[in-house]
Image (cartoon, rainbow, N blue to C red; front, top):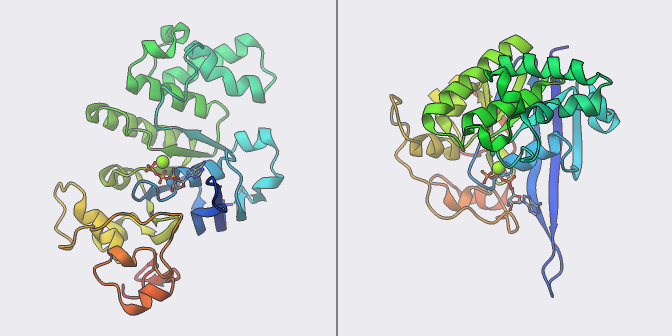
Length: 313
Ligand SMILES: Nc1ncnc2c1ncn2[C@@H]1O[C@H](COP(=O)(O)OP(=O)(O)OP(=O)(O)O)[C@@H](O)[C@H]1O
Ligand SMILES: [Mg+2]
């Protein structure tokens, strides 16, 4: 089976309670559908607050979904038991320091998933940890060190080693290199691409950095305020973005050798997810919004080999 993950009409709403006010719903994920195939890299991009991390947390069951269906390896995720789930999908976090227990040695941090999910002896675990450390470019003698003895890049390698211990099929990487120096970023990204080949992994790669997304992704999902606005292959999206939001994102990203794509800039503040506009959430900032956009929410439609949620694309 080629499809590893399928997400249908996923919603994640948070109840926001304020003193003396009735509670309100914040739609962090608002009707999202997509799928992930074996060995595929899906890049997720969008402004801060658009729901990228919420999506990652729901997919890894760190948060419960409000509604919708998620199937992993052909099974509804609610029906997959904990052990099986952890050997299917793992997450690497943005800040490798915060996500690693400072009082544990590298050996124990990386071995953690084996302690929880397997019956291996201490020696067997240690051997597996050392083997994995080598694969992620960490020397054996680092095993007895604590996280604060590692550089940022090394800490992220530690986090990656831990995530791979159960040989998952899917790795969700939430801004895995944003906290690292630019010179280190490329090393970690290239390591991830090597590991993908070796372990036959599929990645969901979250980043606000378009050059990173371009380097890492086969397909790209562009999010705006909890919804997908454009979803297609990397080349289609980078060479010919159709949604005005995607165009502006690409336009406002630092350019290397890319052509100028449009002459618009993103104006106005991101509306609050607590108070979404009635029609298309992007309409208040959109250079080509029409009357219809202010009243109706555009569905994703297939245009020119990708899906776009825009009446005027
Ligand atoms: N536990 C929570 N309770 C209430 N609201 C939340 C919670 N977690 C996230 N949100 C809200 O959900 C929306 C999406 O947040 P999320 O962290 O998923 O965005 P993001 O795309 O990952 O942003 P960033 O690029 O800054 O990491 C935001 O409006 C955020 O304030
Ligand atoms: Mg985030």
